[in-house]
Length: 206
Ligand SMILES: [Zn+2]
Image (cartoon, rainbow, N blue to C red; front, side, top):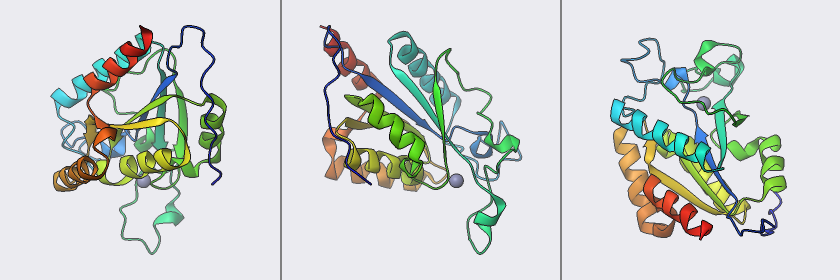
């Protein structure tokens, strides 16, 4: 993958160009209480977490932050000879957004075919075109798709890429904890909370 060259946004008010990338908040990962048929339920997505996530998305939409949803899209063949449980199959309701999720008036979405969203060339092109100053990543699962997408964004873009810890969940709570501790150890400056992201954004407006 070619490295994306950093060009500062030419906004006259020096407003930082910001985006949030929200990963896999789709029916097949729904908490079991909301979707008893979910093949890979993320029960860590409690009512409290869901409310926090929706408030944050709402805040982002009110503050001109570009909102990007990434959704898994798989084909049954992908799961032949795989230990992975089939999920997010093309043209099934499993790919629908979770019902509780706040969808702002304006958002962009991309599909992903593996763990790392940057494998989608269209998503790469979108990032190259927009050259965000700051990017916040959250969603599910912390230890797999969120981590891998965050790590690729960090390596292949010149944006400041944050993992927004309070928006992350995993179907294995232990894997969530381990991933968060790993990040805090190796990239402490990259792991922040929703409130920190808001502060960074607000600071840029001064
Ligand atoms: Zn998947």
